[in-house]
Image 1 (cartoon, rainbow, N blue to C red):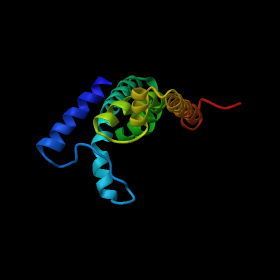
Image 2: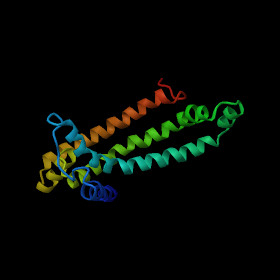
Image 3: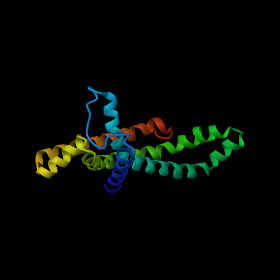
Length: 174
């Protein structure tokens, strides 16, 4: 997507070209040199994660603002509980469910962004394979990658739904 492409270009210009701290593209095998593999994977991971992190942070903040204005938070503060306990134990515990849902839904966005980021950083992976299959009109490979991506997204959403039972005590499996 365009924001990931923008972040990727900006990261390459800053960290690879201007500062020279990290490689701008390529892949290193972790079995050969683990530190070099981490250096090669850092910029693509950052390009993928910045947009997702911003969205999750904004979602967490808006959910927390709504929760911290509720009655049970006022009761906890009136009991004299420390503010740290009120925020962590009561506020974030109740905000975790909606944030977890958004994080699970972002997996689909992540796979779409992987195609752009892996192509931009010349990083071989599922996104690069999908892009090459699209260029070569390799229908069986396109179908296989789309099937794998869809299966991962569905399994992630199933896992998020099942985690709700652990996170939210109001929800029970019967």
